[in-house]
Image (cartoon, rainbow, N blue to C red; front, side, top):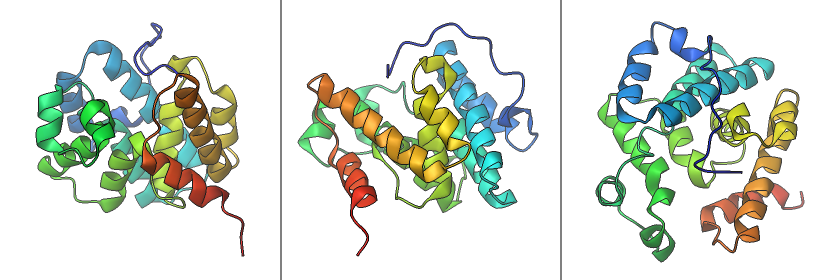
Length: 203
């Protein structure tokens, strides 16, 4: 699961940015990101919308999912100094790996842009280290980010999300943990906490 390398794929011709209510956000995000990163955002947004529709989200959940997907990487290409300013580190891991902050930083940017829907804000914040289990909007974004076609991996997660979102979310967490540990990288405690909550046996 590469965090930076995206093969050149065509930009989606559909997806949330075709909606008049979301187009201004798409334009603002586009101005803050490289073309490659913005193409990733569009693919995530299109997939997140598909996941939401397949799982019969209501109209409010669907709009929240689409907006969160459009905004999820708005702070991804900020400098470490700017990330620290937007989202002060809360651990040594976050101080040494500033990119772990871009979800919290993205939430701050979204709030500054007038976004007040907590479902959107929680999903933006949670897409990096893991959202609350059971939060369908956040789970849809997390899965879409991990499995969008430009990554070239996790096709099974993407397919699973169309019929069982929670199972796909659990699988996406496992994939991320295995990817990081396999490369000798530290897994954020929040990611491990969410994974443990999902795998705890029911009393």
